Length: 76
Image 1 (tube, rainbow, N blue to C red):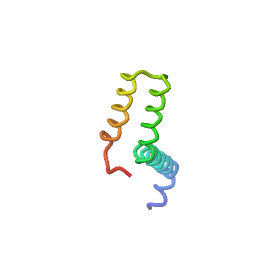
Image 2: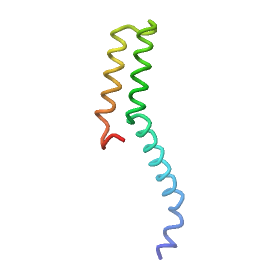
Image 3: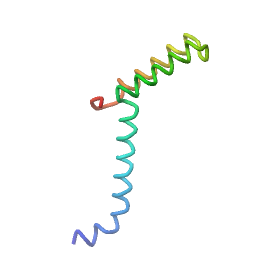
Image 4: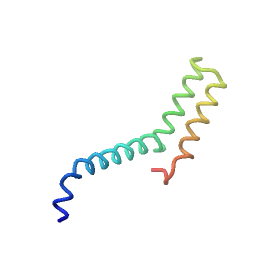
């Protein structure tokens, strides 16, 4: 009986799983210590070269760290 009702839902279940995998990858790329450090270094480099102001750099650092803190689950 499960086979009969499970078949039509297989594509939907596959799509849901794909979305979960994509979300896990995004979380990994945005929350990993290396990714956070790289983003912070990019902000510092932009500040040093004059691409952004001190205030903009501070706001960007705050935004980056806020994203890491606000996301649920343990950091990877």
